[in-house]
Length: 581
Image 1 (cartoon, one colour):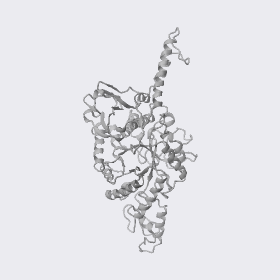
Image 2 (cartoon, rainbow, N blue to C red):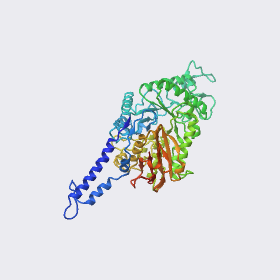
Image 3 (cartoon, rainbow, N blue to C red):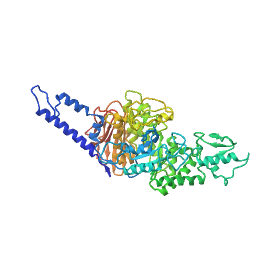
Image 4 (cartoon, rainbow, N blue to C red):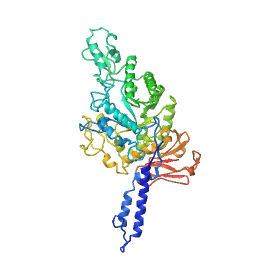
């Protein structure tokens, strides 16, 4: 199935009709003073030309070319939108985002209507933790089979999932298996039992099996915290209130199997596994074993469930986790300020633009060493990283911000977009700042606006809010929305095998070929401040010679000319992406 662009095509056609009508009016309504009058009575050809000029934006130029219909995903190669419910949309006026608020804003993410062109086009949503917790971030879970009351009820969650599925949107939830809260019943039972033991007496698991749910020791080891009122210590690598679970315990695994059943029964389509690298600290093989168990267990219940793990490490390390059979690991090597994308755009990568293509090939080769069924999970930023608005400080910062989003969204696999990045939101420093309220409006008191985490610092955003950007064809929002459309228009972009075309690439231009089944496309990235020209006469693509190719789609960071392709020679505007087919 393909998502039709009827509205887009009609809008372009209507713009042409209006312009043609204006021209006719000008020719037939001349007065003695040489001016003209349009149908509404406005006088002056200069005024008419000004109105026409105002309509030319990066978006309008892109939409003239990008008329290809988007493909509705039927597998786990999706464009996922990461949402921190707490800061997204408040439905009841308490300043905290909630599930009803998120459900009410689903049309922003994906309205499910193939005839419209006003939603982002994301077909997957990842919810950061939604289970009861003592903190704003909710990564310390007190009950794995409930919804935090700040977010609503289980009924609200079921309504949300149903609304997503009606739109063709899949839902995955954060599952925190590495640790629980100290306020979870398991830990409270274990702690109370250990405190009751006479000095030097060993615990009896028959009396309290929960002791073995965690990693207790009478020796204070690295990463261990003291259990007050006893001579015991417990492992808690992240925070004293987040005790690490013992995932080698079969009883713990049985608990999580029941937890998985609970959420699958509610309709979730998979899980994002938090801190998978820390299940057994610095022990890749032990962590892979845990993931192998989890993946097998989940897939036996729901064969098409999507599982993506957070393994915050280098590519060579997280690639090994694919031996577990899980679908995806987040692709940290391309993300954040130190990742491939930013390094290329900042000009610090050794081979400039070509470094992007070389890195894509290396990624493909490295992951393929451990799995032949992996789905890469590229992302640009997430809730633990400074937001991208602060990555570029020069005169071309907005262009580079847009290009970075495109370089992420054009990667093969299951791509992730952190909420607000489509607006160029700002936020760095403490974690609370990175999870600021979704920037719907500059008016903090506007309907639906959240207060954000209590300890968040006060800072001004760099770019406009959604209210302004939604009608600005040159905005980051318009660019990202168009990039998602282009991504969704080509199975070769989402699923394709990458081949770096080094012969046609240099420090300013990167050309990659993507192949999926019978489809091939060329993606041409110009990361420089000037237009670039590439001669493709020597290339062959899907049984076409270079001079037979056409521009299928393009992404422009500003309305400063468009791409041209004549006799096999492509001219690419500054900071832009062209898809040749």
